[in-house]
Amino acid sequence: MSANPHSNGGNVRRELKLPDFRDYAVEVPTPATVETRNTLVLGSYLRDVMGRNPNNFRLFGPDETHSNRLHAVYEVTGKAWMADMLPEDEDGGHLSRDGRVMEMLSEHTLEGWLEGYLLTGRHGLFHTYEAFAHVIDSMFNQHAKWLYICKHDVPWRAPVSSLNILLSSVVWRQDHNGFSHQDPGFIDLVTNKSPDVTDVVMACCGDVPTMESLAATAILREEFPQLRVRFINVVDLFKLPTDDEHPHGLTNDDFDTLFTPDKPVIFNFHGYPWLIHKLIFKRTNQERFQVRGYIEEGNINTPLELAIRNGIDRFHLVVDVINRVPQLRSAAAYVKERMQNQIIESLNYAREHGVDRPEAVEWKWPY
Image (cartoon, rainbow, N blue to C red):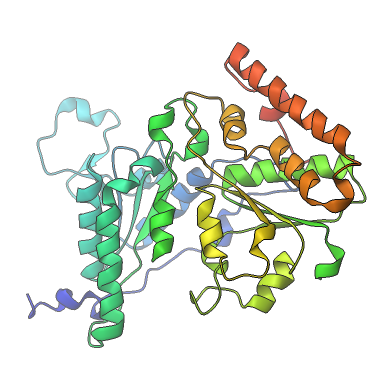
């Protein structure tokens, strides 16, 4: 093996020929009013990545390429298939002897394929349902440890491409599968490896928590026009720890510039809330952070019902702000009661009709 140049894949790795991601931008004429399927857009991008790189990029995943809305890739390649082909496979099977979509209902096999593909100098992406990513926990952990040792103790081994994992069918949209499909904990595993003009900071991470935080901010703007709200959307969790803990981390000065050193922060998070507390443990006055996230409360619920049961909904967030901004605590008791009534009404409607109220489903940013 040592005589094979692919054993040190970083030496034979070629850069990907990537299209300009700006060409795939969704037109947004007015903030928070356009809805689109994010993986559908990603599918078009991956199609063109695979078209430009026919020999060094593959897509790995269980039998979910179409359900994850990545099916545009079938315009340029098929599913790798070495077994017999039957006439009925012609009807949308996308089977191909030279296909570069690697599908198998075995997450650990797919993860192993991808790791081997990367270690021999190529590039790839693995997509899987969020709740079942834990199948590869130990494999991911060992791969990360191996990379760490190579970087620090084996200087002759060249760097390889990143291990890209797309988590789909996320916890906040499991109203049809229920509790068994609700587990945002894989990101916990991965992460192991002007201030005086703001009254409150609304922070968020994840698509559904961001929408609920926006809806809460709109309510605050209507009810308390004098309230000064700073809205922060976090897209890189590794910005939260200090710069001596992670290379992406913000300095304390930069962190305080964004989150302020002393104002309350209502953080709405996609995963388990304690992960945020872990990441910010060295930051200034971390007790001012109120973190909402998934707390294992869910079953066959509507999307808003699931959000309410876990406290990441717009109404709980407004109540959090009222409870933590001094000038609102007593003066805003009537709004707090109205939010609590909205929670009750939303739950009752969901139980009676099996869907969320139209004003929640069709909500758009009003400003």
